[in-house]
Image (cartoon, rainbow, N blue to C red; front, side, top):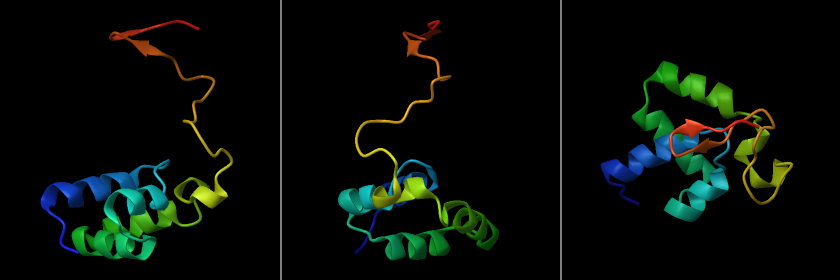
Length: 90
């Protein structure tokens, strides 16, 4: 499968995000986890790739079946709301 530069950049961005699952990348771009790993290896510097692999290996949020929550978006209780460029208080 040939990917353009924009799609490749978006896949790399999604792969770095902690809460974006490999299943979401597969749904959107048709790439399985192994394909994403190969793309990351090809597109990144060796040191950056090793850092990424260390970061995502065993991370529960990167796989839908290992997540604690199934739907919605996780939000920390200490995370503040941002409304119209002003941070609202609790």
